[in-house]
Length: 345
Image 1 (cartoon, helix red, strand yellow):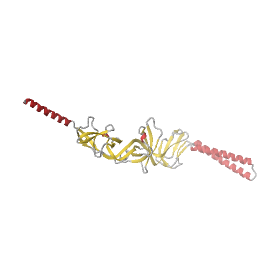
Image 2 (spheres, helix red, strand yellow):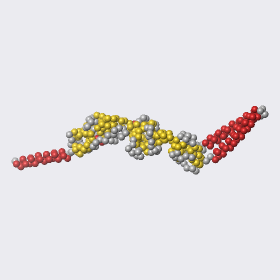
Image 3 (cartoon, one colour):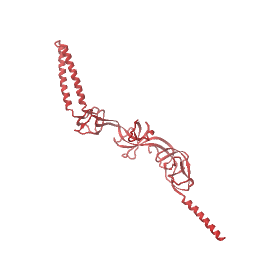
Image 4 (cartoon, one colour):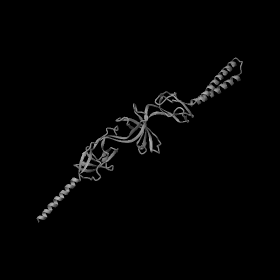
C-alpha cells in the first residue's frame, strides 16, 4: 500500500514537472511593434538622369573634314553663332566668283537702264541685262546656301553640353558633333519597369534623391510618359519636370519615388507582421492571438491596416513559422519607424 502511494506521488510530480517544462519551453521569444498612426505611401521606384528640358543634337547636312570648332563644352552661345565648320575652300571660292559676277551684272544692268532712259539703248538690251542679273543672283543665293551647310550654328541661346568630334576628322552627314541645351529649366528622364507603368500618371508627385546630395529630397511632377516601351529593357521612359529652383549637374544619376497613393493619419504596422495579406498575431496577456485584418497600401517597410486592429495594439513582427494561436510569448517591443509624409517613403 505504501509503495503504491509512493509511486502515485512520483507519477504526479513527473506529470507536473513535464507540464511546467513544456510550458516554459513552448514560450516564443518574439519582437513586436505597437499599431501606430502615420502616412501610408504607395510608390513606384525608378532611376534616371538629369537633362535640360530643351536639348538639341547638332550635325552637318553634308560630309566633309572638320576644319574648326569655335566654341567648346560649357561655353554659352547666342542664337546664330557659328559653332563649327567643314572644309569650305571650294564653296567660298564659288561664292567669291559669283559675287564678282553679280557686281558686273549690276553695272551692266545699270548701264542698260541709263541708255534706255536716254533713248540711246534698246529695251531688249535692258531686259537681257536684268535677266542675266537675276539668274546670277539666284546662283549666288544657292552658293551661299551651300556654304552655310558647311557650318553648324547655334539654333538658340544656350550652353554647349557636349562636343563629340575633333579637328581634322572626316564627318558624315547627320553625324552628331555638338549637343546644346538650355540648363535654366531641368527635367529628369526616368526608366520605369513595364510592370509598374500602370501606376504612373501625368501630374504624379515625384520625390528625387541623389548620392551626391545626401539627406536632400527634391520634388517634381510627371510630365509625360512615352507611349511605346523599350521591349529589350522592358521599361518605359517617364519625364519628370522639376520644381523651380532645382539645380543639379546635367547627366547626374538620380533615384525617384513616384507617389501613386498617399494616405495620412492611418494605422500602420510593420510589413513583416502581415501573414498572407490577411492576418497578424496580436499579443494579449503574453499570448499570441491570431487576428484577421484588412490591409490597404503596402510597401517594403509598412502596411496600412483598414480594419481589425486598434491603435495601441501590439503585433508580432516576423512571427515564427511554428507560432500558433494561444502560444505563450516573451515580447520585445521595437518602436515602429514612421514616415511623416511621402517625403520619407
